[in-house]
Length: 160
Image (cartoon, rainbow, N blue to C red; front, side):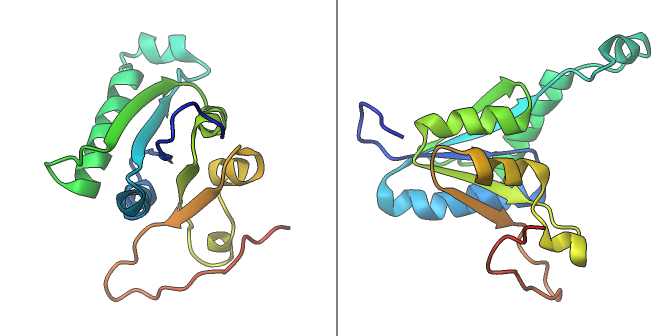
């Protein structure tokens, strides 16, 4: 967490999900009063059997990840991106990339994609890894509730 400059930095994991878009919005709520910079990080990787994908004409993994990152930022903030929001695309597993990025962050924000019911109480694998291994505080954000849907939350992570 120690850095040479005094600028407050918030890293946000972005995967294009509603939860990651909401994570961007919540990060901005913290960033404004702190005059913090936000780094929206998206990760991509080649599938285990990459040659098979290429053989059938499926590719563009990096390009699609970049599109998802830009779309998520636009969904969170509209066409006018705030000046304090920057994006970064990184090749690698999301868990490792975000934990590494937390070394240079004052806060790490990730989304949680709960599936409802009992499964909805549990954190996902990426958010769990970030909570367990990040080098800075972690904020786990769920997707914004849709109008007319029930909204409730567990006040602490459920650990089994």
